[in-house]
Length: 534
Image 1: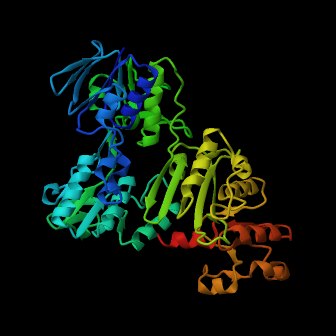
Image 2 (image 1 turned 90 degrees about the vertical axis):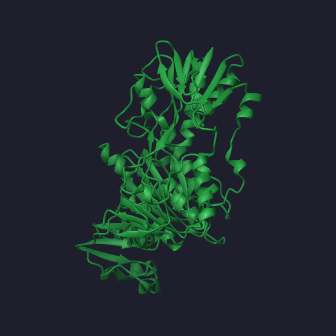
Image 3 (image 1 turned 180 degrees about the horizontal axis):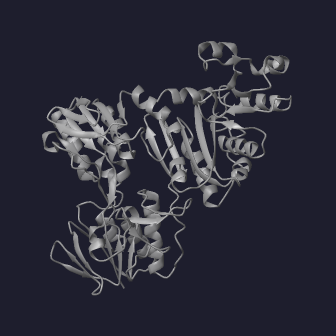
């Protein structure tokens, strides 16, 4: 059996290696138009910044390894130029024709570069390949730029901006949307914006790139930013022109449509990775989600299907993580914008909790947000903090994959020792908070509109004096039972504390003492302050 794979990245390489382990007799060939195969693409920004010092570490598996250990023929510098499905033949830029029994399209994605006026007037770079990273490193070393602009606030843009700062380059990041990292909701990125600014990144949000000139860039607002170089990290688009020419079905964005076994509409042709659209596990629509984890799993699944070990792809959940200087941002499932777009009803919960036991040194605040439906089924989650954001989202992602609910978060038995967590892990705490809300024990409040409310600040007086919501009444939590007569029973009372726990306790006291309209501010003062620092 001849298996031809177009593309030597995550999906293609994973497919080839798995297939060889299942079938030692198959004739497996990979066509890769660049000189690179199995490159650690997600590490490219860190290679630029010198965090990854050895270029050799960027090669996950060399062509020699594929040839010697797996007996896989990798043809680098060989671009597929035409697919002839009826003849089961692929033409290439080298003039060779390759026949196949099974064809796997793992062509990935390409950087999106809009037609911006003046791009030739300033050194402009994209970052997709190791060769791209080499160009940026070489330019930085030879030209020693003082100022750089990064256009785009996605993963690559944020990580590249951080690593340019590591090189001592004054860096500005511009983003047409009102926030960085679009998989996160706006109320979760405020800490990240502050962290970037604290580390010297100038942020221009809600303002896109309009023009480039010799001295820098001009934004849509008319603002001018001086720069010696620009990195365009404006997202990627599926690399599927070859597939479309062959009659393979794609969606509106050009991503290849696949079934549960990653098969296309044409017989014996599969697709995987950044060029493929798969079903989203939360809202069901087919989406192109460019993440390395799904690409590897899809490639493996295709190999199993070809070798007779078929199992269906369960969909893409969209789980990811990003480093933003000293903070980590992690997410899984759907965010609020996606649920609203899909017309799905949902509730939400936000908590601020210590990432490990508060009495153990260095306990930093972890912000955790969970979206769920009326039955408590988890629809998405996001976490931001200096410690433990990734592991909490990994736990919730696993619960979601098993169709779990907030009760599963509440009851999860997780690792505990003071340096790592608390006896009630933040995952447990957010599950408990959701269950409290579902049972009507508390009504959480997320907005900053306090019109007509009595805002009750139950923090200690010194915290209140250092800063508080305008018009708030300060009654420390420990005094509340003795001072109930100071509060009106004919108004809605919004209770807030530092993180959200004491306000919940006070809300329970009020609700059991004749106060019928009581709200608890989710996430507490920390969340309120974070949103003030956009």
